[in-house]
Image (spheres, rainbow, N blue to C red):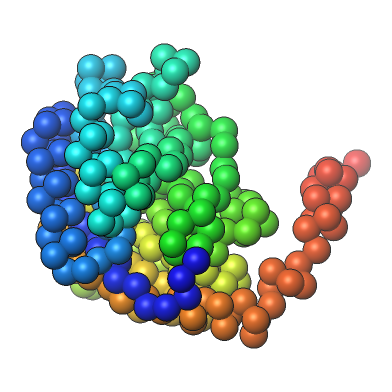
Length: 284
């Protein structure tokens, strides 16, 4: 793991609903731009290869992890790490809302969304199987964990990554516009509050990448951000604006935070497991 400064590219992206080939073309163009700017990692939003409100299209657009569509990403990942979201058809023939992480010419990680929403505009449980694995993996940024959209709002999942030694957290999202408050959206505060808490108390960089654009009358906010291990928002992308943004992060800040705040050192994970296993204290 390199503890120096790194450049991350955030693609606040607007996918074309249901058009896998055109979205892949757009991804490749964005990745090439990021390589030209010497970025070492580029992150796209949730379901960036397909768009979100797919409904019955998920069965037609789902692809397996060994699909030739991924060959271009493998080749490009020799120059830059790549994260994007896609509809995955797994070996069990079930469909997942997944992320892919490419590095060094290989697909090194697939993460499957765990907390599927099923209310309002969200119908994910109708079409997707929930994931059941939450394991950090090694990258040049350290032990890296990924969460997808609603997963990020469950502190237990972020804490589980912290327990397993993650020191770099990526969350990709399709969060809609909700609750206009002045020049901001009330939903944005929810995401940023979570990001600041995780980064501060888990001593990690948190990178949250949200999409923009409209689908079937629903708008998506953007507002992608980075929070540092001091719990500060060090970058926030504009709302509604599709663009490629570059952020410098200093991993030595994270390493210092691990030493100074020492939450990982002083946490008693065995004790926490015991507290949970004792069950709820229900009133008789």
